[in-house]
Length: 493
Image (cartoon, rainbow, N blue to C red; front, side):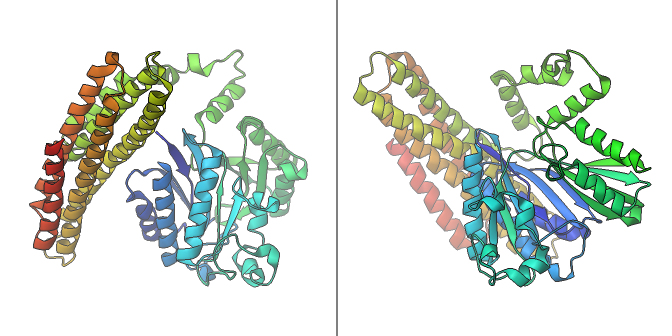
């Protein structure tokens, strides 16, 4: 499955209600899985981490940016962390079956949309940068909100890549980019002054002649009695965490201080912690893949049998989701996978001439796209019914309950309609591909056909049950007519 990670940073770390509203705006997008939410009142900043298929990640990032524009006013924002926007930075990171080029393309699409729809100036940075000097985020954010407000529209070097050549009066500007996984590692020092902390940060960072791939800045945590060296490690394979810790520790001791505590903000690769532990233990010949129990267990669990078991266990659970609508989408996705496999086997057959291979190659692409669409619909179906459950929690006397329930049940009927339509489209592709497939995969094609028919019928069952709860006669009729049309189409096939 194609996945990207997105780690938007927001200039709000104190108001929990605002943070939750921003996070919810991203979480409500089907396919999004929130991994982590970090807030810091001193930095006055929130770091959200989520993974999703590329288009879902783009939509979630946009919605959270829109909510941040609504809730955050930079004219009254004061915090220790540099910032130029309500949503300050939005990086996309390749995770699974995606590349840094894919992430750069997402950054451009999101930047254009934010600039156009939210009227916020957007700067592309890091691997998405259109100007070499903008690869470094510090250059983009130079002067912060107030400095950029004075320069934008006057200095051509500060012209944004997208959006107006003027600062948004309350939301500022945003940097949108693509990058590899980084580690945000903060080291809190006691017994040193801010001047000493500044000298330590300068000495250890790459730009000061220190460690490669390391950015560092001093921050005054006066309320805690610490001076913080806030670091960003852009490549832990070149500079491991242990090297960062040891360098700062040595400089702090030389200044008469010590490390009081450290913080890891957001997510980091497991390898970074394993390497740190191995370095501290001075373990010779240590092989994590062979000696870490969880690594061995995960190697076993990556097989398709374990994945199938986890899926069936999820459906067997007594929680409301996943249910029949998700099962319909999974059935359709399995059918597309079978058809994709059978077409691939046929392409490799010596019996297939060039003309047949071209047609089969097109079928493989179509089945792959439909498989991924149906996979997303399985998640959308569960999310839509979760919306019904949330609406049901609203007190009966609350005037918001009726419209919330009406909207939730309509969405819960719309998703299985999409599942039925996608399964019918796959059935049409399958019928064309069956005549091209070799005999050895005929049973697989037949199984795919049965699964697709089941997917349509199961999806329509879910449409009917949700339509029965819709009180608006017009909406109910519209959805029922669409369901009947799909059922009639299935009968013709």
